[in-house]
Length: 70
Image 1 (cartoon, helix red, strand yellow):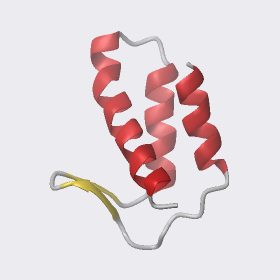
Image 2 (tube, helix red, strand yellow; image 1 turned 90 degrees about the vertical axis):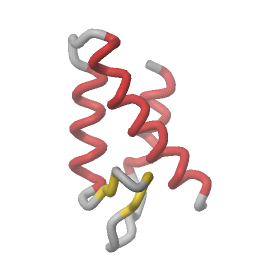
Image 3 (cartoon, rainbow, N blue to C red; image 1 turned 180 degrees about the vertical axis):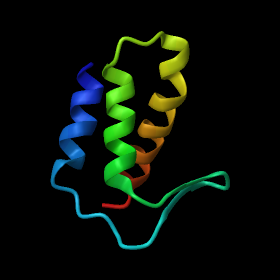
C-alpha cells in the first residue's frame, strides 16, 4: 500500500491540464479527479487481486506519465 499512498499524495495538490490526457490509444482521461478517486477506491476495497490489477495498471501508468512531465 506504500506505492498507493505515494501516488495519492502526488495527486493531492496536482494542477491538471484542461485538455484530456491520453494514456494510450484506447484510454483518454477526461476528468482526472474522478479517475483517480474511483481507481483508489477500487484498489482499497475488498476485491480480489485479479479485479484490482487493471485499475492498478492504469493508475500507475497515469502517475508515471504525469510524473515524467514535471
